[in-house]
Image (cartoon, rainbow, N blue to C red):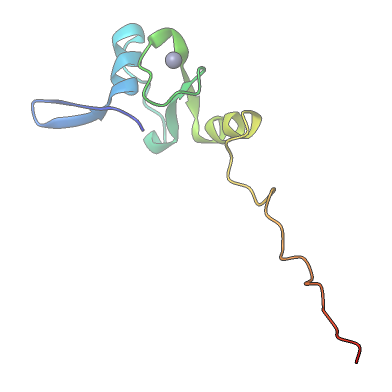
Length: 89
Ligand SMILES: [Zn+2]
């Protein structure tokens, strides 16, 4: 769970604030929702700026995939066919 900080009535994700304290304002892009602060340590509550890096939503999804956190259907199995019990009379 990401930590949230509130200053002057404005709530921000703590890891984003931490990254900005260390590196300056998060650069503006054509799509501000595409700018992400990612965790090298894969620990969402972490705010250590040495563990944070600036990336895009796509990079965030790729990072999740590499770390095995991406939502996939792998590991899901269909119900195996049930064994049919027959009585021979
Ligand atoms: Zn960390």
